[in-house]
Amino acid sequence: MARDTDVIDTPDPAANGLERQIAGLDALEMAARSQHGVVRRAWASTWPVLAAVAIAIVIWEIVVLSGWKPTYVLPGPGDVFPQLGKDLSEGAFWSGLGLTMRRAVMGFALAILVGAVLGAVVSRVRFLRVAFGSLITGLQTMPSIAWFPLAILLFQLSESAILFVIVIGAAPSIANGLIAGVDYTPPILLRAGKILGLRGVALYRHLILPASLPAFVTGLKQGWAFAWRSLMAGELLVIIGHHASLGVRLEYARENIDAPDMIATMIIILVIGIVIDRLFSAADRTLRARRGLESS
Image 1 (tube, rainbow, N blue to C red):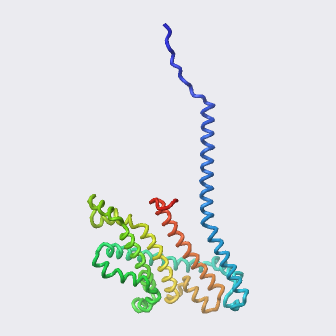
Image 2 (image 1 turned 60 degrees about the vertical axis):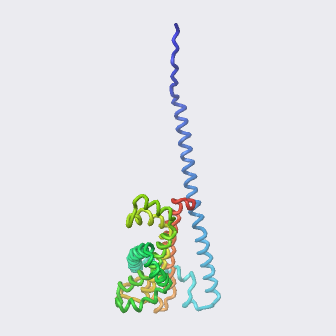
């Protein structure tokens, strides 16, 4: 009686090698497409900025060539950009920039702490909302420079005077951002959190703060703008010893009628503000993409 024999298919080494090569080519193609997509997105977000800068420089040069002001008052790009390059090559410039950025980071960190605590308390206590809600908005609209006479009386010409104005200028925006985020937290989430046993600090930590994060990031972005403007005003008004910060360099250039150096310093201040703003915008886009609010 003949027995049926099992036929075992043996793998073909040549076929397996071909499949691995095809898989490798597919992976390379997908990686190339991914890199191309990243480059394309980066260029799409960069070229409008470069175009705007080019247009601004052209308009600037046209105004200078029109003879509206003498060149020692309003120098053109040909005079300012060489001065900018000279400043960037000096150690004193980077020392002053470091001092300015250190003040900005310290002041903004304190503003985040004060604004977050204030916003968290006011947003959840109805009495405090009624009592202080309008006051916080009023403080947000008050020009930062108006606080400097009081700050100088309280702290004299010191770092504390500058930090005081930075905090009081930025904290209301941060607090209002958190308050807005809490206000737009869906009530169904709050009910679900309470059903799960979240109360007090735990409710804030695990539910309210994550839900209000997009609005809070927007408040941080606006708070940074107020903090940066307050810092620049403070460094112009509160000159401490021989600390050559960006604001001090700006004031010295004005006193010496050194318009190229003054405008070069202004360009540095503008660029820093734009870079930080774009970092906050990138964080906001990433957060929204993770929550499905927009494509990444």
